[in-house]
Image (cartoon, rainbow, N blue to C red; front, side, top):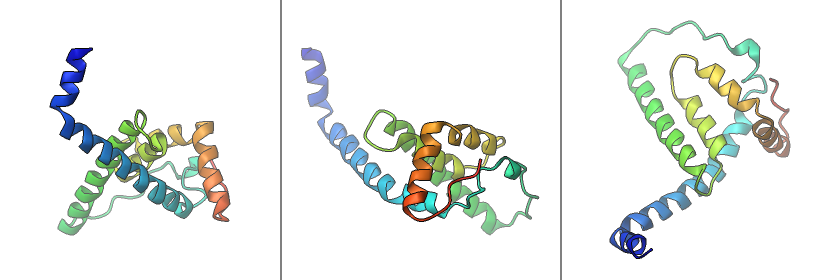
Length: 137
């Protein structure tokens, strides 16, 4: 027990940073996630939308935006995984992070997460409070 207390004292600054980071992600997720869920089209996760759209021509601007979007998605994904153990909406943050990332099979993975009853019920509750129709799966 003394070794644990010593370790905590040695890394007090890191513990404060983790605590503050957890609080910031909790507040941001509480504000941004409902905003994003309300703006999704009702058929966004419908099985009929699983097919990937036709590829667009690659430009420098599109590559830079894609890299930025993937960086934001990776940060949200990491924050969501942390929120599984810390305060916050872990599964919903993971879902938003996955939506930002670009990788093969992404839509199927998102759909697998969204079809979990607890996730779809939470998303539809948020949409109902905003006067939006429920998600069609």
